[in-house]
Image (cartoon, rainbow, N blue to C red; front, side):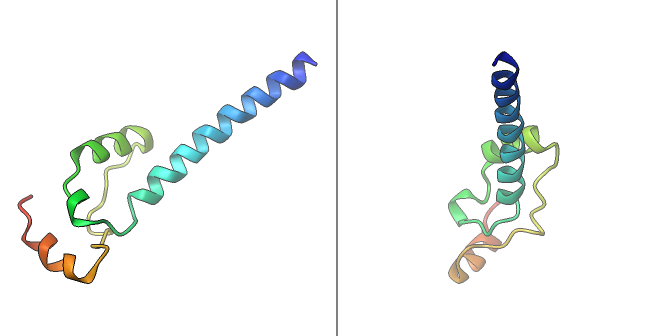
Length: 75
């Protein structure tokens, strides 16, 4: 019984780690709203989890009207 329980716990942590990786890698590529475009906190957290920096050439504004606003944001 202890072996089964330990396998369940190990499996849970493995699934949790893989799910976290998948979430942050997906979030780094999703369309993004203007208010979150320059979010240093998200970038830092995502890079620490995935080991990859966010590639802004791969991200696009979420709304058509945001395309102009994001292009004029100070970076």
